[in-house]
Amino acid sequence: MMKNKEKIESLFKEIIELLEDSSGINSFDESMVDTPERVTKMWGNELLKGYHMHPQELIKLFPNTSKNPEEIEIGNIPFYSMCEHHMMPFFGRMTIKYIPGNFVLGLSKIPRVVEAYARRFQLQERLGQQIADAIVKYGKARSVEVIIEAEHTCMTARGIQSIGSITKTKSTSFATK
Ligand SMILES: [Zn+2]
Image 1 (cartoon, rainbow, N blue to C red):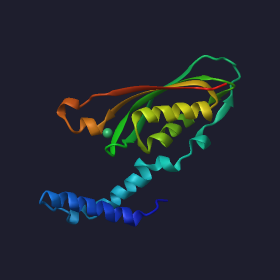
Image 2 (cartoon, rainbow, N blue to C red):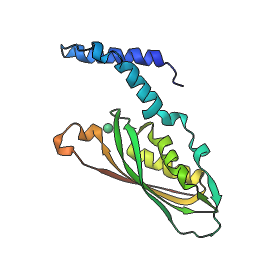
Image 3 (cartoon, protein in one colour):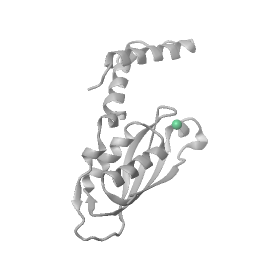
Image 4 (cartoon, protein in one colour):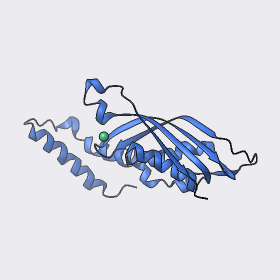
């Protein structure tokens, strides 16, 4: 599935060696021999697998028989993503609220749509916007609001003062007609 697997593995190995070398320590021994392969696999098969997922194929639509324009809210959806600035995970929960048009979304597919966009290099704001736009475009919703609360490890792993801090964003999208 992953292109250039061997090349990426050898580059990870080189990065580790160069980072350690610059500090005068080199612990790239037996215990780390399989690390480049493990990391490559984890990035390709897990952390960045969203590049191989297609949201338009994941969304399932059902006729909105109630013709009721009231809001539908799906809350507490967990996600994991990768900050594109630091290549460190950010993770949390999101709430998706939408006003349906002639269709409602199959609920079981929503976490897969979230995963398709989250498992890429991302920004929290863009993640929310892409999900909102996809539900308007492919889910034929009238309007969508995506609220994300996330912990960014690029922030919290660096300072004791930041542990537990949460970033909250809200993204909206509206059908044009
Ligand atoms: Zn970051």
